[in-house]
Image 1 (cartoon, rainbow, N blue to C red):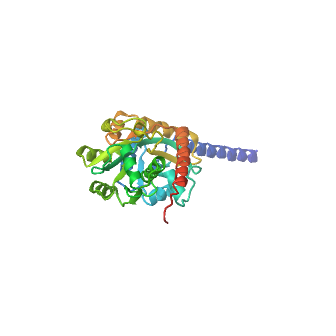
Image 2 (cartoon, rainbow, N blue to C red):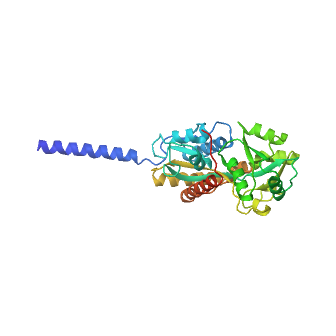
Image 3 (cartoon, one colour):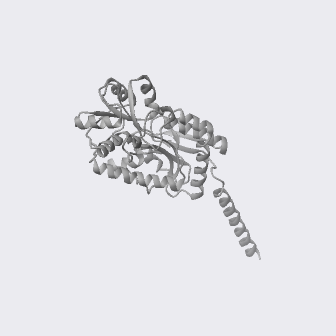
Amino acid sequence: MEMIATRRRILAAGALAAFGSSGFAQQPYPAKAIRLIVPYPPGGGTTIVAHLLSQRINESWGQSVIVDNRGGGGGIIGTAAMLQAPADGYTLLVASSTHVINPLLLPVPYDAIKDFAAVTGLYSSELVLVVNSSLPANNLQEFIALAKSQPGKLNYGVVSVGGTTHLAGELLNVMSGIKTQHVAYKGAGPAMQDLIGGQVQFSFVAPAAALTYVKSGQLKALAISGQHRLPAMSQVPTFAEAGLPDFTARVWFGILARAGTPREIVEKLSAEVARIMALPDTKEKLGGQGLEPFVAGPEQFSAVLKSDMARYANLVKTANIKLEQ
């Protein structure tokens, strides 16, 4: 009898331990602070949006969201750091279009598709083609004609070699049959000043970066990517309206988790971020910078990653783009 009683006590203790462990494991997400890695230096628009998310999620879920800037390597360093964390939804990455471009041009310690779980889109920005005010071209077709008459003579400034603005220039070369050359800068400020000063003749920039200079007459905006004109630059036609209907140069940002993150966590995160990005004050803050909410759930965002990577891979091959190591 004593042996039976002892065995029952052991079984009961085991059951309680299992229940306690199960109860802990099943605590609703999030049960602790979330780390949001921004793979760029502090101070940019991405960091601003990340802090906005941090504030809103804290208000809604009662958990801290720690914004962790890990700049360097064009986003590669921060992206790789994220993969050192467990696939539990407590470490997330703010990724941009360069997430699928980097592996096409540089050795990276991860698979941009297989190692990540798409959570949601955040926001996007179209790119506007701007030229120095003295350039004798007032629309896209005049610009293309000028570039064809001077092969290799027109230069465009880029901040990130291999980034979206660089590839936008290469795409324009391929689609319009012109030959222009990129010039790399170590910051958006110097690149813009050289464009205004005429050291480079054109560039692709976010509308918010161009608006002041276009209004002052220092730059001319010839065309903007996307399917519709922006209210703040309503006089600037889309590339489709200007004669290049297949020109696409959108820069997007979104949230990625590690592959293997539980589906219910991915869906909960996606729904919460979508709610935040749809708030009137969020839209107002984005609109003031020429940005738009990028509404995309896990499946749609995953499809964007794959389709953009295939599209850029084709461009890299067609234009024979190679980066010096």
